[in-house]
Structure formats: structure tokens, C-alpha cells
Length: 204
Image (spheres, rainbow, N blue to C red):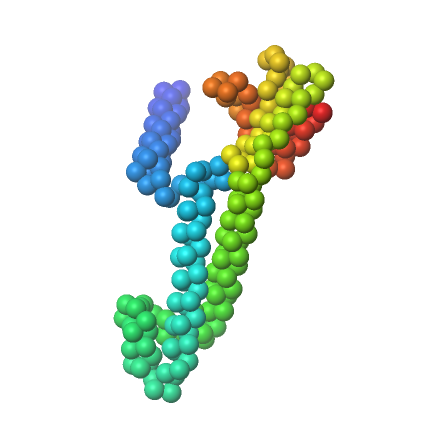
């Protein structure tokens, strides 16, 4: 039984290693698939690309539904022809004319609503990112010598300690996403409500 447990543990570790390696390879080969982080140099460009695609999809769905309604009396063949004229493959056009569970054809209202909400979300994120990129880096130092560096353009908050913080403080830092960066000599985290609150309390 002990051997079986050891073998199972090693197999699990191997599977987990292969999965991590696979994800690392995908990240290296397809950087466009990784999440868009506010501190990325190309964040605005990638968000603009996502926005363009979402807006194009919205117009495409609206046009498809309009074409289906316009040619309703002429029948399915005319509706399929209208959809293919808009650039939809015939197989997709025919699929759009099949009623869903609620008897709806074309793109459902919720699909347009969800995509419209996504367009708004991307725009709002772009606006916030643009504001952050233009915001100044703010620094302050406490009486104990702990220096806080709030860096909106890089989407980072950093804490510089005059000496190595104690274990309890290090645990708090790690719990809120802070990691030690030896290259800059600071504990660093992404800017969010919890990391900012901890940074402010430690540097008060």
C-alpha cells in the first residue's frame, strides 16, 4: 500500500508538472491569450483590439436579426441568402434559423445584451487604465522608515522596509499578494483595495 501511495503521488506530481509546462509553452507561443494586466505595456492596444471585436460582433448580430426579420415573409431560403450576404457561412445561417428552447430564431436578446455589457466593461477599463497611466507616482515614508510607493502607471504598490520585516508582517504581505523583489529591494503587489489598505496601514 505504501508503494502504491508513493507511485500515485509521483504520478500526480508528473501530471501537474506536465500541465504547468503545457501552460508555460502556450504562454510563450501565444502571448495574446494571456490575461490583460494593467501594467502591461500593450494593455491599451490589446483592450482596443478586444473592443473592436466586441463592437463588430454587436453590429453583426444586429444586422443578422434585421435580415431575418426583413425576409421573414419570403421564407427561410431568402433569410439564409440574406445572412450569407452578410458574410455568415451557410451552415451558421441555417443554425440561426433553428428555434431555440423559447422558440426564438437569430441572435437572442440576451446575447446582444451580454455583448453590449462587455463593450461597456472594456471601455470603462480602458478609461481607468488611461487615467492610471497619466497619474503620478506617489511616495510617502512613515516615522519607522517604511516607504510606500504607489505606482498607478505600472499598476503596482511597493513597500520599502529599512530592515527585513518580521515573520508576522511577511505573512500579512504574502496574504495580500505582495512578493519580495530583490531587483528593486521592495515588497511589491498589484494595486487593488486590499493591497493598498495593507500598504497604507504599514506605512502610516
